[in-house]
Image (cartoon, rainbow over all chains, first blue to last red; front, top):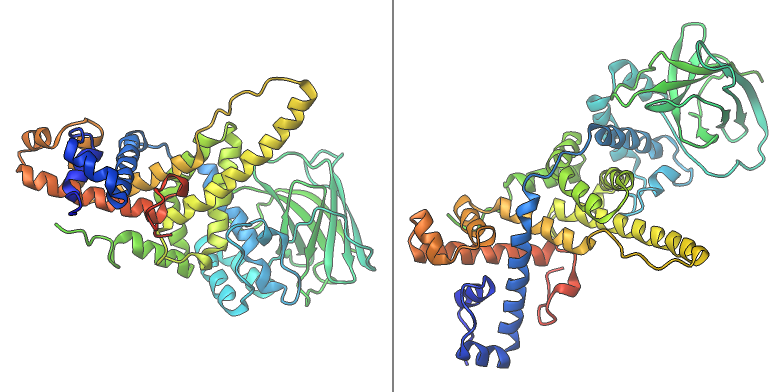
Length: 252
Length: 200
């Protein structure tokens, strides 16, 4: 029994004509032709429904800014914390699964990303000490505290804003903040050398009051002794915005 | 004119390979090209606009961070992105359904009908729309006249001045491409007739 011509099936699927008796007889007896016709009909229906999809609106610009900010925070994680657990920020990318830590390629990727979105000055700082942001929901476990700082409102920040920074024995910075003013962008945490105002970003502060940020193992906290929380815009500029909200000096 | 437009070297494939290789400008290009489709999937399936924007953002972040898991031989980049977005949409729908059930139990209210579209259908439409846009101009034009203007092959031949046999051939090839693409990148295996093995 010869199958129906494919042209004929397309014809029927597009509703050019109704199936005649011989079509029906064949289709009743031939599952492959019937399935093909069903598929073609379904595709024709989908095709007809695409008319409304031709001029979809552009996403708002803040979406792209959010994407780059989130990626920038997440991509810098594994390179800088070899041996630590997978960071939460990567786990949020729940599907597909996050790529396994692969230090060399990741370093290369970060270098390219830096060229793309990072100012030269900030890139140099990142290359030296790197940036790590591990966000955790729960309070940190008990750890020896090797240094601490009380953060107070800086500049025109409302005085109710304050925070506490503790450097833990495992090399993490635990930050607890309260009453931070709302900002259009996001909060970023810095360590600053008050002698020459050199600084590097330690990571991004999420919406919660607590954050644990691994510090580079070789950081000299005697030099980089000031903890600073800044308000940053989603502007692809990773240098400090100059808008500090909180500051405090670490004391051992 | 031929059906070979998807061979390596097509702009979509080149973008997909650069994306997978971690070339940052490819992320922006993919977003410019497919961000609208992902946002449409989210906004047409989720009631809350900010949920839809969250899903769109999370989709591109997850795709970029997980780009090594993208296999260009198994489907297109936009199909993969829509698959990620679809799972995120379904997660949101499930969690809001859970919240709703709680509220419902408390208030003993009747169950309002869900207001969003079915995510699988939206994905399938977007995939077919993408393929339609990639077809050679003549094939696309003939199919659009058939789909949108509901013209017969004869009428299309009359309107376009293209011989009837050529119209038929364009439409047949175009339909074959749309169907193949739907089988590869579509989301709704349930809609697929059981007799088809389905290239998934």
